[in-house]
Image (tube, rainbow, N blue to C red; front, side, top):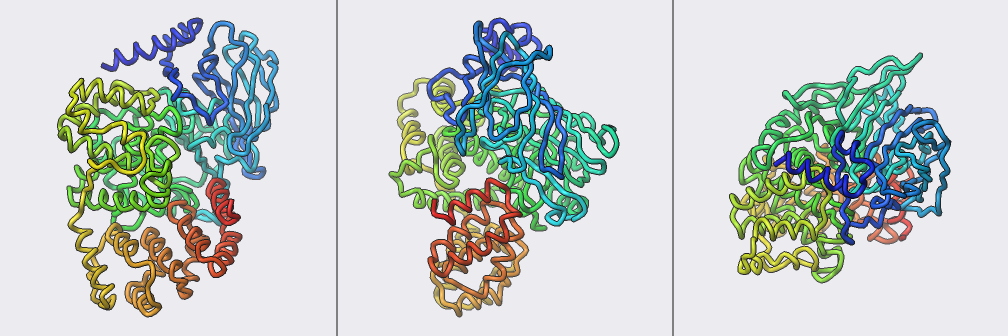
Length: 625
């Protein structure tokens, strides 16, 4: 099957770009989808005319100027007669553009959009390799530069990137679209005593001399990937092996805690392979970042980036690791062609994550997490405007985490209707058929009909595929997995509402998920006496578990509970994960004259610790734009 897929990829590349048949024979070039729904509105690229197939970077990281500068060499696949290639540029300082022989090429930067950046148009003049000398800017949207005081060790500065969804165009001149997959290689020069890691094979893990006071690290990625998955981090990093294919990078001060929390990583890889086929990326290492990392995790190939907030000492949140690992199949292997197709990435992965958790930790754990996701989905549907709102559709700009949760419920519903064995056989074959290729919602439904439904009209009617994909709300066949453990928590909520003191709650052995259920499902209006009882008895304002503390602070804000304000400020100035902090700012803003001044005051202090994308989104929230 893999040979057949390889042949198909080559055929697509050769038919679209015939003069490059020799290059295609040397390196598999992923196809560009030609249907209208595969056109990426967030990219200026015109890949059916000329597309980037390989990126080679030779860059220097400068902490003093907060810039990355050097050279990007791009291999171009072009149709006969194509005069230009169009790249995506978000504030890059371009010094020169030449062909592979050093000849200057004519280039121009078009009108800029605050979100999308600008088109960088390069006249090819027959060139099939272009060499761009450039530098990023200090405010580059993909990059966060941390002073030593914001790291765990507090000895050296730190840099990390976050490319998804369209941020990498602020430090790499390429076609920044998930449907234009590219191979890449890199040489990264950093100050002596620091380590660079990237989302590819680490060719020189210890680095090599690069002149006085500097060290270079080399990387390569031979599989074509969507460019948002090119990632970099530089800091005072240590490494520990977790298994034959797995390990963890982080600051030395965090290494023991991180390795302990990640002890099951190798088992997760093996478990995932048993479900949906071989892991195709070589190693699966993780990088645990400083607290300002804006997401829970980022599925960068060979090197998942993780927030330290998942470390709670009880491995209660390793579902996050399972999620990012699952992306090695759904998202990295088969990628959404455009961002309205995000559910093909996140919905598949959320479903797959739950299957890994079930296989590794048992059905009750998986049921608990699926039931929590159902509750979050219902909240997101309401937040998006209710069941008929456009923001509740799978295909499109979904609200909240609907792409994750509604997508997973869709796939779980298909499983329930066709049976798990049949569904697993199909899903494994789907990953094989479309490996290292982009996909659209329409393309997935077409594949599902061809390879699972196979003309069965009764099954087609039961599945209701088009309503799931293109209409708002939830179809009537949606499967809600219910957890007995969370039902017991619900009974505790009812008891507390009826007047029982917090001391009577059986919370001592609760997992993070049970705490979240309890705090999120309490009435949003409680008396000060009830809040005092909860906080004094359960020590919620002092919780070191970021998930629990965030949920508690949401409740405190809803009640204008001022004793929690010191905890709120400490939390918002020490954590940068958007999932945990955005609801707190949103809650403060809803509290009008009481909450808005608090939100603005805390944000002014916290802003330097946030990733640029998180800071920008919160600033818009606070300004009402």
